Each structure stands twice: as structure tokens, then as C-alpha cells.
Length: 154
Image 1: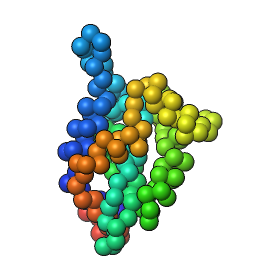
Image 2 (image 1 turned 60 degrees about the horizontal axis):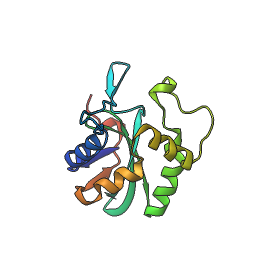
Image 3 (image 1 turned 180 degrees about the vertical axis):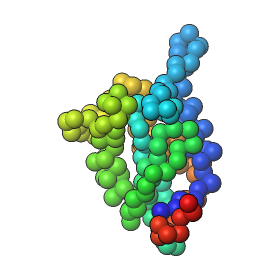
Image 4 (image 1 turned 135 degrees about the vertical axis):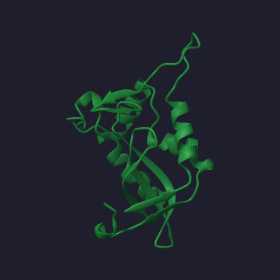
């Protein structure tokens, strides 16, 4: 998988701005967490990035799993024919994203998407759908290409 996008600048800015809430006294609360030598933007090891994309010349909806560190490097992508299919998948997967506070593991009991949204609110974190809404006007084109592992440079 190879992902090309010119939208990283917009995505990073909006998400980082959201993750630095201003406190009542005007100071900013720091949410970043150090884990295994990496500075993560919050408790989640990954975020799911919902957006329109092109794959094999076709318009698709993509959920790109990105490491929750500066620059949001992609880990994998899943594509769907419709936004509804992508959102349905996102709502199934997002509650099980591994967390630093859980030793890098997913929650031990399955939680509903509604419970996950409530957890995000309590932690002052955006859900993937909220991140999509914040960034949908400032997106560049995302192109997803399947590549053979032999094509990767070592």
C-alpha cells in the first residue's frame, strides 16, 4: 500500500489545534503522551482517518489508520464504495483502538461506539467523525495504490 496525499498540512493543523484546549485561565492543557520513545498526541496509539480517495482510478471512501504521532504516518488503509459503509466500519473498529493507558492494548471488554464517544468527550478528544468534519473542506486528494512488497525500497 502506498498513500499519496497533499492534505497532511491541513489535517495536522486542525487536529493539533483541537488537541490543545485552552483552559479558563488562558493556559493550554498538554495532552501529548510519551510511550515507547514516541510522543503521541493523546492516549490512542492510532486514529482512523475517514476521507474520499481514488484507488485504481475509481472514487472510493477510505479509512486510513494512522499512528497518532506528529505527521500522522499511515499504517494501513481500507476502502469502501460508500461513505455509509466506511462509517459503519469505523464505528465498529474505533472503540477498540489500542491505548497507552492500557499498555498499548485495546479495551479488555468490547464497548459500543456510543460509550467510545462518551470516553472521548471525557478525555476532551475528537472522534474520527469529528476529525473528518473539521477537515473535510481542507482536504487534498488522497490516492491509494497497491504495491508489491518487492517494489519497496530497502
